Image (cartoon, rainbow, N blue to C red):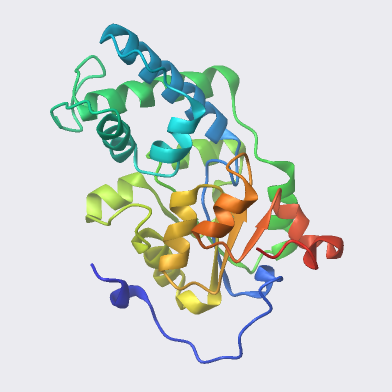
Length: 262
């Protein structure tokens, strides 16, 4: 799949980059943008990799810096592969059907996923209030999609009571089934815009991960909103965000519009 296959052109007057809410379609990452499940994922990655490193005598501990540099926003197995490569550790790829006890790339990814599901089921999940306020402000006729590397997107959205808000969901399951490259490639976002019937130039991407912002930038979308949940404004701006905010509700506050542009 090439970018041009999913990048319709649009010749309308450019919109105000400080007002992404004026665009026609809104493509939201899930973890860290709609729900704070990014924190759950961080805990699960930490628990899984820390135990793996201890068991294999890896002296350098797993840190949050590892998460942001190699894991955040990527499909699960890509995150495992990238971090192991960064540490000089070679494991067999395995297969998605590998049990969580299997020491393969897929096995470790499945081990992490089991931890995430257990944490969500034990503690529940609630959406960010600012994101809900922003969704409310967009109105019932806005074209909305979730674009997530997670294979648990529908379960998380159901738990948050938001599944009915979104016309389409392009998640890790869809990407795997259709062979769509994951973030930082733009393809999942482009597919979501195509499903909504809106050209990329009239759609906005909302992301908290550097890899996701890079995907939005590569897709030539009308705007890419970076939501800073810990990565840092500079990192999101450097990755290609057209505007960076601490919370999506900030986009509705005129006081933020003059100074929030990246």
